[in-house]
Image (cartoon, rainbow, N blue to C red):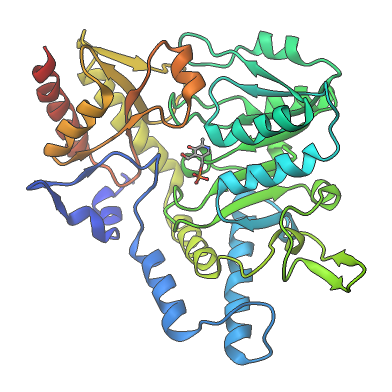
Length: 404
Ligand code: PLP
């Protein structure tokens, strides 16, 4: 059965709005996706009918809210094939990576090495730089090839006994490249390193089975997965979470507190200090339940077809440079237009109702690798249509004419 994009779209209220007098063409989902009615309703309903703080109450609303919050954890666990105790709620992928970096960093020594890649989002670079600055840890970066793949030969060469951590993205938010993560994790483990995979983009477009990937840690954000902002996931293997020191201190993460000493709660609660993002977790749970009702293979094929169509239509454009052409890449088109700054391109496209991102995409080292200071990025989601792909190509062609 064909993928029914009209039926999907009808569930996203925002997609029917106009921008600058034109129908909105939202091609910025890699930055943050729009929300289906199911997510909006779940959050409103929680506030209207069953809201309280979690875990600490003995009254009905506290119990109901706790049940909904923990149900969301179960939905996340089922989505990625994890055990429930291995799923930590954070405020986003960024916080999840900071939590792991701080925790692992505590037992690293000056001269230990961490391997990252040139295609990382700053969220998976800066927390490790903290360890370089504060502890003398050495950062190594796997180079990226001209077509946007990781150079695996170079990766193997970097894997010396000094390497304690390998952290990399599953799918690049700029190039769309899907990295061979299972293979990389296997090699890293053989070398004795702990692994972290940034799944922010991949989780949206493909099934993820953390046990099959075998990564020690896997992180993502709710807001790119059609859920709300303010919620992220840290998956950690139970044994890894058990040995990781707590990140923040406060209520709910302790066993007991006295004036002289503290004991900690078991994971995942050890890493959820204070009142957690309750409504956001419930919203993410609703997003996952909603996605479970979507034929995700058909959605991925639909996104791939949109991307293929756009690149075919733009194939002859000698004013366009596409960053990232790795085989099997996802539906993310990063590009520069000759003679134009990416910000200007994005602003002119906006006049046609087309929303794209422009800038460094929080990936300055990657921009440098490709010799550009910025790029524009059109990212396709399951709710985008063939007509929108056409509207984008049309608006981009008109935009380019301003600079020709
Ligand atoms: N990693 C990747 C690959 C991303 O695309 C993003 C967001 O753009 C992040 C990490 C950071 O996610 P957040 O800002 O939700 O913490």
